[in-house]
Every structure is written in C-alpha cells, then in structure tokens.
Length: 246
Ligand code: CAA
Image (cartoon, rainbow, N blue to C red; front, side):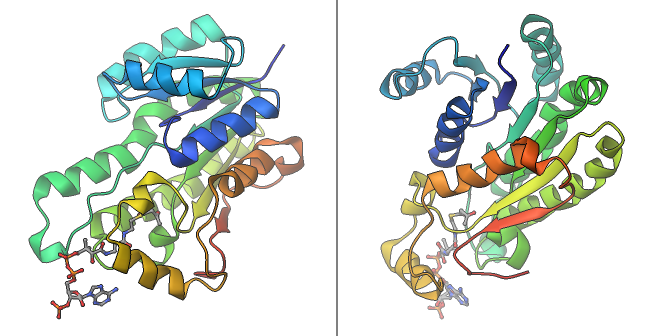
C-alpha cells in the first residue's frame, strides 16, 4: 500500500513540484486547493497527467479552523493516516509597513501561519500514533533574514520556524519529525509577479545569480520525507543559492 502525503496549496509553483516529486517517490498525494478553485485544480491535474490513484484533489480553506476540523478527520477515516504533511500554502501581500492595510497583515498571517494550526492539529495525533511520520513546513529565506516590504510575510514565515521546532519536541518520541524547508527566490508565479527591476536587483544579490527551480525545493522535501531523513528534526533546510547563510 502506498504511503499517504497531504500537500496544501499543491497546484502553486512550489506545491506542484512537490506533488510531482512525491508521486515519483511512490506516495498517494492528497492535493489541497483553495475553496472555489475546482476548475483550475482539475486543469492542473489534467496538465500534469496525474492518475486518480496517485493524486486526490481536496478542497480546503486552510485559514478556516472549523472547516479543517470538520473535513480532515473525515479524510483520515476515508484514506488513513497521513504519513507526510507538507504545509506549503502561502501568499504574499507585500507593501511598506507604514502603509500596510490591516487586511493584508491578517491575510498573510492567516494563510501562512494560522494554517499550520488548522491543518496540522487534526492530523497530528494519528501521525504520532502511527509513528515514523513527517511534518514539513515550507517557510522562506525571508522568514530567516527579513525583507523590505514583507513585515507580514517575514513574521509568518519566521513563526513557522518556531512552530516547527516546538512541534518537533512533541513528535520526537513517536518518530514524527518536524522540519522546515526555507526556499530562496524560486521561479514561480509568486516571484515572477514582482516588479521586474526589483526582481533583477534581488537576483543580483544571490551568490548563484539565478532563481531556484521549483524541483530543487521539492528535492529537499523528498529527502526530509524519506527514511534517510528519519533522524533530522526541528531543522531548517535552506535552499537559497547562498542568499542567506544562517
Ligand atoms: N532596502 C531599503 N530601501 C528600499 C529597498 C530595500 N531593499 N527597496 C526599496 N527601498 C526604498 C526605495 O528606494 C524607495 O525609496 P525612495 O522613496 O527614497 O525612492 C522606497 O523604499 C519605496 O520603495 P518602492 O518604490 O519599491 O515602494 P513601493 O510601495 O512601490 O513598493 C514593495 C514596495 C512592493 C515592497 C517593493 O519594494 C517590493 O516589491 N519589494 C520586494 C519585496 C519582496 O522581496 N518580495 C518577495 C516576494 S516573493 C516571496 O516572498 C517568495 C519568497 O519566499 C522569497
């Protein structure tokens, strides 16, 4: 029987690459997509030529605590315990702090940080009971170093790291590892949406002088999910071309 992975925000730039990688690694993937986006999700499923054995589309608003509490235990009953949870869903609402609208603060904290509570809590007890499971949270180089115009995003992404380290303690006895992958600037629609001159100036600061490819982030997730990663917990694995060395 295939191991089971759940990936939030799975059709985004990095999420899609992680889904493809974990399918290659032999997992059945529960691929969550945001409320109302079924048509887009189905299109993505077709484009990637997934099979229904390998990937199940699952509508979930990760910011909605009640919805997660209602839907995720049912999913466990239908599919079994999640072996690998990848909290990947994330958004940006960049802007100077002095001009930041409260809704842009809240949207980013809700989607990027509060989602970790909403999605992980309904799944975690079963993971501990089963043992040898993985929680992998996708943070960012900007959660480690901060970034101009990203007080909301950097706060949420740094919060993910604290959450992960604390949860690593709670999972350790059961062999449930909790780790962070911290991508640098990656060639995804999120990064490509930046003003070209701002993106060019950031690229020039990356020692490797290029963006990450999404599959390079997915490889790090694959490693942490594998048996080879069983003794790594509470860690942050940076994949950032040398942009920030912590
Ligand atoms: N450090 C210091 N000052 C800076 C600066 C920096 N890094 N960047 C801009 N400034 C200055 C500008 O020179 C400008 O100064 P003047 O008013 O004296 O001209 C002032 O700050 C305002 O800057 P902008 O003109 O850029 O302001 P804006 O309101 O048009 O745009 C912004 C603000 C949207 C935040 C824009 O600066 C920006 O896009 N910054 C980059 C944010 C970023 O890196 N986002 C990453 C998105 S991808 C992602 O998040 C994925 C991941 O995990 C890596």
